[in-house]
Image (cartoon, rainbow over all chains, first blue to last red):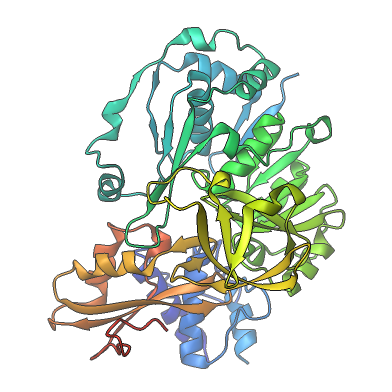
Length: 74
Length: 412
């Protein structure tokens, strides 16, 4: 699991929505404030992460940053 | 006293009650169809419609031209604009004048909104002032309430909050579709006392171990809320009572519960019944809708009875196919119909998958008839035809959609 694969998933969601893709992300990137995700985007993100890594990152509480996702996938 | 009527941090605009009144007097034209992404504009148009005793229809700000045509049959609703008879507004110069006039709302006034129909297109539901404000509680003790506004202003839940605040002369602070930090700072800065929102809104609210002592009431409705979240809300909103409400576009708010068990108030006892565990609501509690001819309306909500008399129950699931996405109802048939319009789509099935963020997420499977059709083509087409929350987020191409024995498409 690395930043690059999270970035790919984030960009798939952004692309699907017709939004500008992100060029780089870090652990501190905020999904809502920096990436611009709304609740529907976050929902799609969790489905795509779950399909790939078999973990529902939102299951037990809120996920704000890319670092939060990485922590759940460990 | 010039008190705050509405604050919108998305455009940083503050409107005082006096400004609302001044703007009402300055309005020269009125359109019976209201479509705006500016919340204040929607609120103002509703107030003007009541004062003028004119019917008003609310359109979601993200309805496409095509959707509006399908719903209303109108090519150009903007042309319905007409001049305002100012004599009806002349008695209003203060907030209390305005509220008094609103209370005297004529029986002619009607408000129409759209909700997902159970077959195909959304349907219109029309309410009179009386049925609309049945649950508005006006009292001196409510006069200093400050409402956090966390719904779409053109939907039933948002309108109920709006009327509750309006009729009590309260302040309304927008919280919907704003960054988390702004939501939190708005609650603190304006000393918000009441928040009404969907479980999705609360799920995505990061409370950052802060506490918000000004909040006295948290209302959740539209979907099931999880007990973990309730516990977390209790910690942050230390002085708040947490209420769960059952409401529908057809009936407005009907029942409230403190956990997940709902009971029926005595005065409503004879207007609600259960038929094979499905909640039925008497038509006298509902707004007018074209398709409603029976005396009882089958809500489609299946319940588990906890106690027979007095009736106490829990909501279990939906009987019909409607999908609840973050509190918005989506009809999979409507989405399928639009997807079928796309060239190169042979078959389609739209279904829900459970989701920890928004309750359910819309997915679809498509059998293509043309190799050239791409996922991007489909998304592009749908974006211009359907509201955002109705769009399938996960699209899969399959070689075959499994049908049930009766030949109907199977919902997963």
